Image (tube, rainbow, N blue to C red; front, side, top):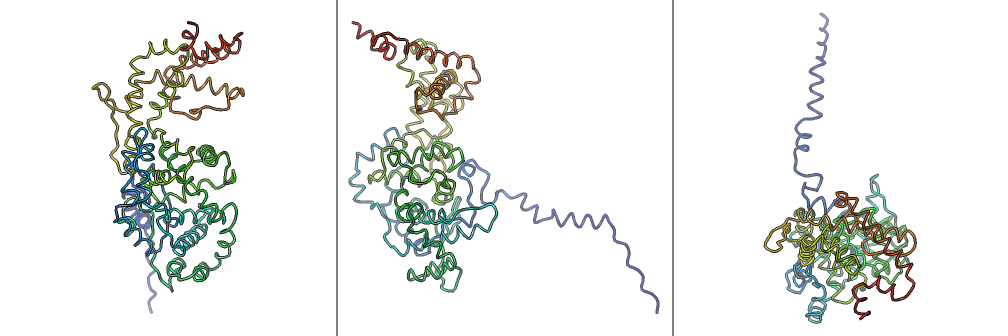
Amino acid sequence: MAARPAPAPADPLAAAILAFETAVGATPMATLLQDTNGSAVYSNEKALFGYLPSDLYLALPATVVTDVCAREATPNVPRKRIDLKDLGKVNGLENYLSVGADTYKNDVPYLAYNNGLHTLKIAAMNFYNLVSARTTADFMISDETAVLISLLRARWVALGCLHTIDPAVIKDGTREHSEVVSVASLAGGTAIERIAAAGSIADIYTALGATASVFAAHFNGDLYGMNMAVRIAEAVWCVSEYLFRTRGHHFKEAFTQPIIKALKAAFEGDLPLPLNAEWNHIFHTAIHPFGVRALPIMSAHFMIHGKVGNGLMLRMGSAPNGVAAITTSKAVIDVIATESWYPMFAMNFTDQLTLCNKMADAILNDKYAYSLAAKLYGLERKTMVTVDGIAYSIESGKSHVSGIATVGQGLINALAAQKDAGVIEGFSFENAQALAKLARTNPLLAAKVSTMVALSLELLAQAKTLDQASAMVFPSVAPKAAA
């Protein structure tokens, strides 16, 4: 029998081309050409809103979703009674607190749900998902924080925070920014499907399996349990609203100190959580699925019902992100307006002062529309301000007020030096960074102003009489006193 011929040697080039086609062929190229980045489309709004992995979405029993959608059809839900255009005006919150507040409280209950078993289901489902997500290397969360977050989510649903979302988003999850998962009740299904189907606390315990003991151990804990969730739910929500409006993101590491400061203000100097709390999860993972529009609407809801302290209510007047160069410049003007050298400053910057004040007033009277994230609030973004018949873009306005910004940065530098020296404890815009870039165009002016402020304080310290000191502190009053 003749020998079978040896197979022809493989063509190295053909093999290399085949491997290359397999690696970068149709499927990989489809990925490369898609217009999404995971679940985030390339848009300004998505960049600001950020990203939450799908396994960390807010899980809700389908029965709760049905209740939410039914309630949404009624007129007395927060999003139909609180208008962001009105709330975003100067004194917008004050108007809601003084006009019709009693009627609102009668019409819109503070607590949207009082079904204890459903609330426990929400907490248990979300806890199970959070601890299960720890199998991925890039997500770490402690047991106690997972319990607290799950309880916060359940509490926020009970308070009605989900009612500000279009019911179509909740039902099918197909709309942009939807991070809510409706879970069907299925007795023989997955753990969270069994939790959704649970008819008793014992059923929830069984469905949680090995995680049940961990959930129960922390549920009644002092720092991360049920009582803490009820205590801080409104404060965390309102601080989140303030951070997103003024900083444009839910959380960054740089936000840690502002968060601690705001929470202390909410609780009369007492920080309810440890300094080393997992702030990223509390202010990002927990609240992210509720969306952005819900933040100011529900903050106002809490405040109208009298559940939030003045420390957080005052923060509702802060300017939106993206315009700080203009609004901070105005804040600086207000500070230096009583200084003896202010008239000379005003003479040199008359037009800039007028423009800065009028632009800042317009922005502060429509805070959410002038935000970089206006569309996330459900509003058309405003980028122009008309002053004396002339339309200015926000960016051109920043350029026009650069002189004021430079003077402002000089003041900030001087006050920072006084803080470092222990003369003052702090000042309202000590963390402002928006003026620094504009001030670089004229660093000499900033240095001169900083020196002048320091000199005025030095002269004050050298005053030999109370009258001399008073004249330096209150220059506009001094001539009247002398007369």
